[in-house]
Structure formats: structure tokens, C-alpha cells
Amino acid sequence: MALKIDVLTLFPRMLDGFLSESILGKAIEGGLVQVQVHDLRAWTTDKHRTADDRPFGGGAGMVMKPEPVFAAIEQVQTPGCRRIYLTPDGVPLSPKLAEELSQQQHLVLLSGHYEGIDQRIRDGVIDQEISIGDYVLTNGTLAAAVLIDAMARFIPGVLGEEKSLTHESFTSKLLDFPQYTRPAEFRGMSVPEVLLSGNHAQIERWRQARALEKTRQVRPDLLE
Image (tube, rainbow, N blue to C red; front, side, top):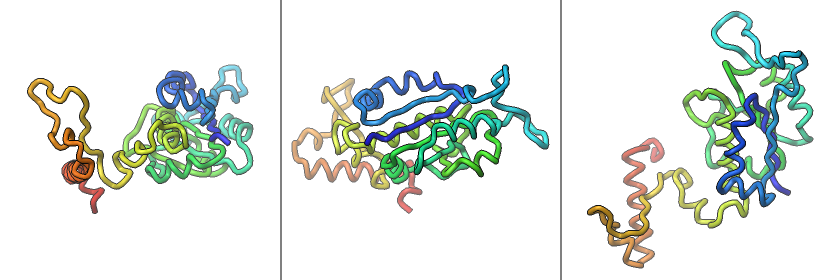
């Protein structure tokens, strides 16, 4: 059964192009993953379609109201589904977490906006909170897109070549090695001779060495 994903957001059109292009678009078209995007304002009950309000206690910005979010999640959820809130203060997204989520049957992704969501949403209808990095975005729809893409790579048949899953940055705690393609000479810059040698053992050793060197320079914390 294909992984089913429901995305709840105030800006559903942000995902239109993302979900229809490239590898992910082909995966959806081929039925390998199902993604449905919902406008949270469809669950508001006033004529202004109000989904946010000022925070109790004062402060800048607006907070997403609990009523439409509760109603939306309760309508789209299924027994055993994982209800996820995308937020900067969630647990960090990792390849291991993305792979684990890709094996679920149904995910409900809630995109936060403005100053966040009413805490009662987190307490009442959220199972897991995930952050895609130590930074703040204008809204969580972008984070939902990143999570979907990261998970889709682990679904059998989505990637054209299985090695793509094992020869990527972070998969083995190392950053990726340098990649080259034709032409072998370009503006005085040459492709390393070892990559032209046809000796796959030497090529693999060279790639491992370059990956280790890059990791030491850019992300030494990964080697601790």
C-alpha cells in the first residue's frame, strides 16, 4: 500500500509545483506515494474564515486557532496514522527518521504559520513534532515539502538507482564526495585521473578519502 500523506496548511498553492515536478511528481503519478493538500481555512466557521488570533498574554504576531485545526485533523486522520507538526522546536529531521516515517501507512502533516499554533493542538491531536533545521521559515509549508521529499527517497521505486540511497551526504556520517562528468577538461580544470582509470577499487578509496576530508573541513562534528 502506498504511503498516504495529508498536508494541512493555510497556503496550499505553495505545494502545487513542488508536488508535480521531477522525481516526486513521477512518484505521485505512478502511485508510489499519495499526497493530498488541504486548506485549513475550509474548517473555519466564520464569514472571514479566521484561522488565527492574537496570543493571550500579549506579544508580537498571531497564533493559529485550535478550532479549525482540531476539526481538520479529526476529519482526515485514520486509525494508527502519525500526526506530525512541523516546527523549529521539534526533534531534528534525520535520514533515519525520514526512513522510519516512509514506512508508515498514513501521515498527517500540520504546517505551522505566524507565531505558531495554540498549545492545545500540540497536546490534543499531535503525535510528533519535527524540525528540519535550526532556523525559522516564514511558514511550515516549506518544512512539510522538505519532509515529504526526504521520506519519498526511501520508498521503493521512487529513485531510479538504489545506490543513490547509500552514496549521499549523512547516510554514512560523511558528506558526499566530489562528482564530475564530461568533458574531462574544462577551462583548464581537469577531472582527477583516478576517475578516468576504470579501477573501481581505487575510485572507491579516492571517494572515501575525499568524503572524509570534506567532512573534517566542513562538519567535524559528524566525526565525533
